Amino acid sequence: MKKALLLFLVSLTGFFHSWSQQPANSLLWKISGNGLQQDSYLFGSFHILCKDDLKISDTLKSKIANAKVFYSEIKLDEEGMEAKMALKMRMQNTTLEALIGKSDYAMVNERFQQITNLPLQMLDHFKPFMAISLLTINTLSCKEKSSPETEFAKIAKENKVPNLGLETIDDQIAVIDKWSLDSQIHALTESVLHFDSSKRALKEMIAIYKQRNVDSLYQYMKEKGTSDDFELDMLITRNHNWVPIIETAIKQQPAFFVVGAGHLGGPDGVLNLLRKRGYRLTPVNY
Image 1 (cartoon, one colour):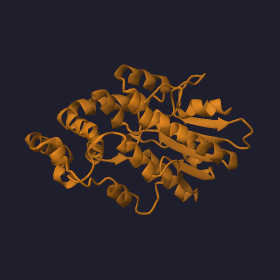
Image 2: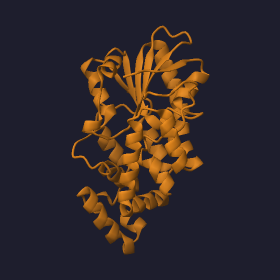
Image 3: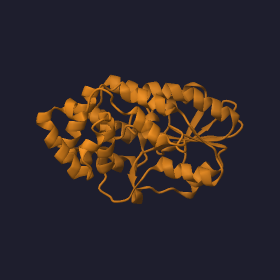
Image 4: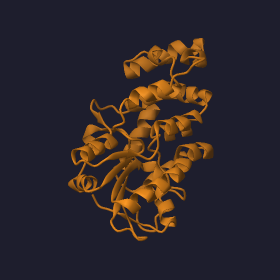
C-alpha cells in the first residue's frame, strides 16, 4: 500500500519508463511526421509545485500561444467544475469516521488537522480521496503553491486558445471509484501517520522531475514499485483512451497537450503509443 500511495502522491503525476529510442532529456515533446501539416506539442507536468519551482520559459509560452487548441487532462475552465467534482465525491451511506473506526478516528483527525489546519470532520461525508488530495498538497512545505496546468491554461486563455479536456469529470471519478473505499482509507491513514515519509518521497520526486530526464524518473519508480492493477487503472487505460483524441486533434490543427508526466513513458505511455501510430516524438529544449 505504501508503494501504491507513492504513485498516488503524484496521482496524477506518477513516473514510468520512457520507451523513447533517443535520449529522453525533456518533458516537452514535439509531435510531427505521419502526414501532419504542422507540429503539435506534449508536456509532462507535475500537478502541484512550489511557485518558485515553476519556471515557464518563453519557449513554453510560445508553444502554448501558437497552438490552435489547448488540452489538459480535464477542461480546466469548465463552469462549476469544483462543485461538480465535490458533489460526485460525496458518500451516501457511510462516513470517514465509520470507515476509519472510532478507536482510530480521533488520532487520525488530530494529526490531519495539524497537517492541513482543517478538521477531518469537514470531509466526513466525502470519499477518502478528497482528504488524501489535501494531504498531498500539504506535502509541499512552501507557502505559495502553483499548478503548471492552471498557469498554462491562463496563457492559452490570454492568447484566445480554446481549452479542452482529454477526459471528463465523470471519467476521473470512475478512475477514483476503481480504488476501493477500504484501500483509500488505508492510504489516508498511512499518509497521515507517516506524513514525514510522504514529504521526503515527494521532495525526491520533484528533484528528479526537475532534471527533466524521463529515464531517471523511470528508475526511481522502478525502485519504489507499484501494483499492476493500480498502474493499469491510473495510467495505462487512460493513456489508451487519450491517444485517439490526441490523434484526431493534431490532424486537424496544431495543439498543445499537458498531462501528468507519468503518462508519457512506458510501453503503454502516450509517447510510445503515438510512435506506434507512426508519429515522430522529439524532445525539445525549453
